[in-house]
Image (cartoon, rainbow, N blue to C red):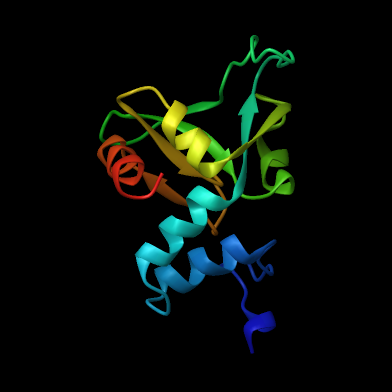
Length: 134
């Protein structure tokens, strides 16, 4: 049953996007479907500082990966960001396409860092998503 899908920790996906991440990872859904959903979804970006109405004050939560790339932390649901609230307690909600278009060149994304329903998108992947989907 669709509703019985669980992540590696036995948790239910928080939303349709998370179900699609799991389905794509398991080969049950094409990656292209996931990327289309990702650019259409509401995503949440953590900030270490309060974000003003004009967008100033945004200090994103960043991670380094083994390839030496900087990855911006992005969450599929606000509840996924709580594990990192000590480092970045503010959230900015953006449509996926807006996030991908605004991401500086050379940056990638880590979706739901530290959570089983997550993934990394390297900088070259961000460029391809902007070109092909956003």
